[in-house]
Length: 220
Image 1 (cartoon, one colour):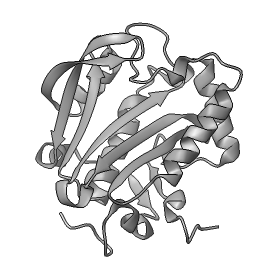
Image 2 (cartoon, helix red, strand yellow):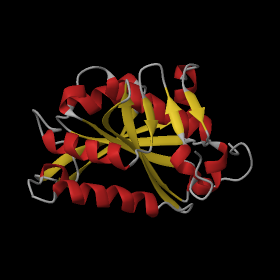
Image 3 (cartoon, one colour):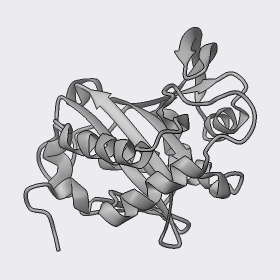
């Protein structure tokens, strides 16, 4: 059943390996349990926020409320799209994209996490390629940005593998204290030679106004 008042709930990005879409309530609860079970196994702490490591009795409830607040807060002038990652129908993590004044700037940032059992399987690269396809092919982005803490070799490797170039370094407060961060940039001209023809965008057109876009196709 579609969502005529909130069509972004029907949006699907599908690759041969995984699917990105908004989770239902049961799936969101499963993702909360997956996050609490552990996302960070070794190396420097990779996340900007520390809510992923909090060991509190109401952790899952806070996780649930947070993601519903993100969905409710989507608006064309400033959107944060959090899509769950599904592998063989099983919730595996989240892949996000966020932007401000997107119709004018055509720039979006991305961020993601995977449950510990899904890491080191190439899924980080696959889900990044999926969200890049949505941004460039589906929404007409001109630039995609990302960031990695120095020492987070998984994130750094994905960005380099997909053709990003470094776009500066600076110190920032991470969940466990100050650290140095690498900023990454991928422009459309750098993405085009790497674009894939096996990624599907389903039910996107009704969602375009939610991204500040109008018409059947975004203007590039």
